[in-house]
Amino acid sequence: MSFLQEIEHGLQTLGGHALPQPAAVLAQQIEQYLRLIERWNKIHNLTAIRDLHDMLYQHVLDSLVVLPHIQGPQIIDVGSGAGLPGIPLALARPDWNVTLIESNQKKTAFLQQVKIELKLHHVSIVSRRCEAVQLNWSPDTIISRAFSELGNFVALTAKLAMQGAENCQWVAMKAHCTQKELDQITPPFFIDRIVNLEVFGLNADRQLIIIKKR
Image (cartoon, rainbow, N blue to C red):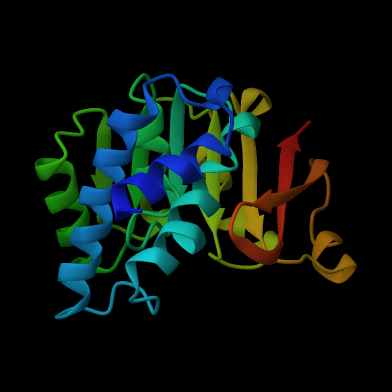
């Protein structure tokens, strides 16, 4: 099985309802994205995972499995790093506007290269710390992957949703969230639900902590 076929097979496990474009098209874009990570990793430390196959499961499919629980069309990925989960979400949903916030200059240079090479006109890249970012529009979802503890995540990003905050959701991707960390969420914020996820090819705990504001 070629790597492209492996990607297509992995996408099929997500269910077609989550993918508005053909899996074959998305698979080609994902392969291009992963090979860009592989190439840049030789010079810049974008991600500790170096193997393409491991990146597919631990980065891309891990990001895409959240799709049914994300509300668009305005998405913010905070602490995007190598573009996770923002780039996979943008590839899967070209009808969404995805903003990647990342303060590391080398990583934002990589994200700009991904945007150019994959022609992601619906992706915006902000090279600043999230607490310094000001928006003139309202996000529908603010998502983070291994960014920080829940309390810090909400505190640092709360003002991003000052306009229309009651319609925004904060989504934290976690391996496992302790009760102590869950208790960091206090009014006016509340935990709307906790979703346990299974990622094809990945034997690991995955949770989505979905937070809203009253």
